[in-house]
Image (tube, rainbow, N blue to C red; front, top):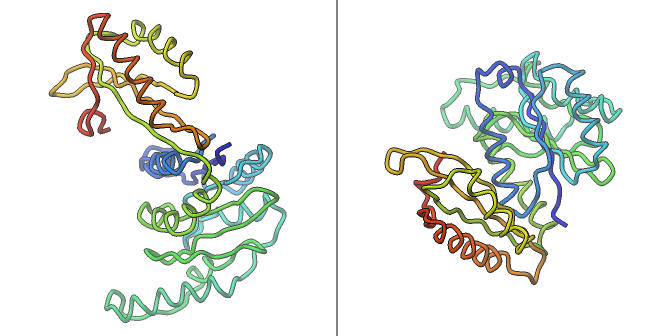
Length: 278
């Protein structure tokens, strides 16, 4: 079975529509491509009670990973680590390794001429207070360390909300863990462009193909572009346990879809990157 992942995105700015939650989309795509399975993603406000409830309810489902984004910075409303600590029943403690990471980052910025001087202020020191038994993760793109905790079989990994910082920490620390757990799985996906049929007309074909190839998941996406006008993207994917070849199964399912739709008089072809760009 693939490792299971749940995401808790923290930030008032996400819930008022000020900032788009691009982190969630990026993480969902990365987890899937690494042969993990994103089970659920939620947004919560910068409030301790909301963070605690989200973490505890997620832990009740025993996923392999809980990823959080946002709320690790130096300001008063950065509360994610405090919320996680409350949820786990652990105190927040000054972590010496995290503090050293913050200090090294500050001194490096001064050495590179990006900051005139570095003083370890209380707001900066706040970022080094982690739940007991937490492991700080070096942030190569910013000051706030990421954080790794274990609770039973679940690994909790807190990452900054700034996208390039989140991506750097995920790529460095989280990807290897997911790859290790999913090493016995293989994943493949492809899309077809369909013109001349609506979703309701495509549905019987999709049902037929998924019945014949139960390992393949097919999802239709209505789209529109200047070049093609209105069309349907049929996205097909399979996550299989070795030695089953996910690519071979998806290609066979794709060929059956192509034949069925073509016989019905619609236009169908393999999608390119421009067709499915969001």
